[in-house]
Image 1 (cartoon, helix red, strand yellow):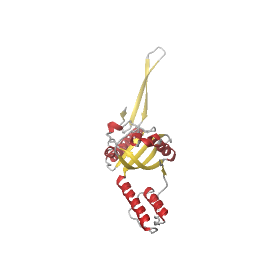
Image 2 (cartoon, rainbow, N blue to C red):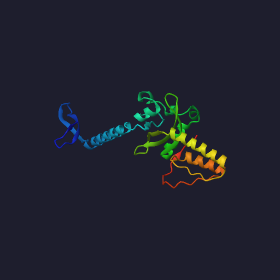
Image 3 (cartoon, rainbow, N blue to C red):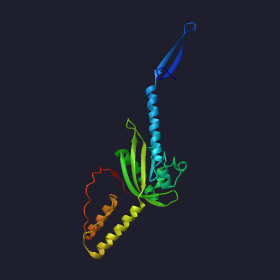
Image 4 (tube, one colour):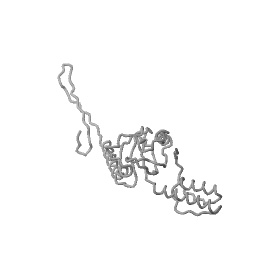
Length: 230
């Protein structure tokens, strides 16, 4: 392999040609221009490196890849901070270890991957387990990764810790229920709820049961995504 005078990357292969008596009579050389292919490979490596640096720099989200079977294939600093595992401890392990035992028994991790593979993406929220056994409320997006031929190469998983917001929503629901029980039907205005559909949906159920009403939120225009419960 060498660069030509015009700066093309050439792969050369040579073969010795012999006559009927076995004497060498010529050398055959085939030159193949691989410049474009190597430039594409270099660009791909540089793109992957930039993406790796970007992901590694994110601290507020756990961002990592899974194999098609659900084993951890990459790990970023945000994942280590959120879940407590170092890369050398978790890469190669099945991602079901992040889920409570009852959800693992019900097959939820595998079900999430099936939905993501079929629909392209799945959203989920619920309790997850850290390395030390403590729990946190997670908002999760799993995206299927496919090549140009459509072959599934794995999944990208993004997790955010929403524990404080979930606890705030629970306190809000308890307050709303108490208001409904003590004061009867009324209109209750609640500000600051941004999670969906959990807090708003549960809040509406409480208000409907008591006869109270809650203003409907404006349409956000967000596209529909699949969510898995249970």
